[in-house]
Length: 576
Image (cartoon, rainbow, N blue to C red; front, side, top):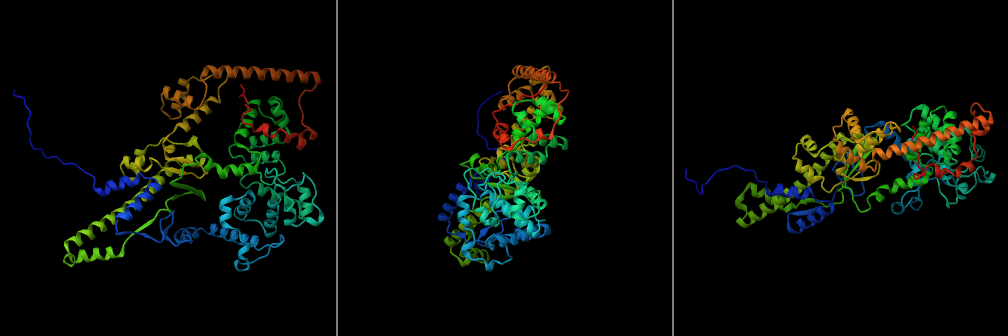
């Protein structure tokens, strides 16, 4: 057989992307800043393109006038009668606040309010809103069942937050007016409390005690929880009563521990506290650990941390998409409203129509010029709109797949791939990868994260490993292989090597070190119980019985160790 090289023609069929498709892929992976630069360059090169003076709504994309809300979004919201009623009540409340004089609220209209009496919007943007302004804005929405007197009382209590009087000090009789009382506020230390008892407030504000207690409780239940209460003990107790992750028995027990037994907790007398509240010592430790991880003691500090969380988390990152939760539904905003809105010049539109109707009305060079620049401008605008629609489709599908993560945290993060998203919305996987390559998302909890978070289940696996290790005892410590078996039973097919990787990533020590730590803690617990038994034998007490004088520790005595209770550096060893 003769072997050799020769050249011969061969016919094959391939698909090549068009210039418009290549341009779309280039625009898709650009950030908003890069896209704005690209738009400016395209405008300078294409005479058929010009900037449209109108703006578009970031939610629905419809054209809106400058300074005016989107009529399409408003009409959709108007379909909800309850929401419309709440907005009307909020508007009435704002009118009452702005038209108030010397603390007396009177019905008014916007025409009756002078321009210099309205707040400076730009000043509020620069300095941010305060805790008091936030609470005043939430009362009409979340406390819409209040009467006029209850609303006025709620506003008065909010104005009294962090007033510079000592706990229980009575306000002078001639200072029952809200503005005069609030004028005494001293903002040196601002935890977000009202240093008055309910009895003193009811007397000085001349309102029924039952009404004041109810309104004060409702204000304290607003986010951040505890605003306007008397001390950090009350703030912790209220959070325990409202903790949705605990059952009724645990909520009641934790509230009792906070109110009556924090002094024993600081000394780590868990066995003694457990007998008093009717729980096991191990469960008391778990509740205290839950309190340290989830509760706060200063409402104002909590509010300021929430306001600046996104900025601190990613100080140099600008989000491309925002996901908001409104009435238990997620809304998507593509944050590109600052980009120039493009349109085709009217002359080129008319000329192109004439060219299609009669080619002989233009010369060859004119036909080439009009056709080239008109089609180039039309394709460019179409690609920008397709880029926006692709981001909307991808984000909407991510919300459907990762709704548990958005509502409940990393533990509910599902395994998701870009290929699954692509198959659902009908695009190629490379399109999804390009769209999310350098994109960031603004989540409902006010944090800014990369879109890669939705496709990385490591945070979920680390939290699951931590939950498995909570059942460990000194005699039973799980190895990585046993952890893998438990994960497989829960439906997560992972190898032992992957479990080790996630364990190290979560800074979880190996089984040998965990066993030594648990043994040491068990020994300390046994010594503590022996000491407690010896103390009971010496005193002749059969059991510890709470008395009313022991259930009410003095506020000054407990407040000195508030920070100790929630100090993250103070470790609580798990019980056997």
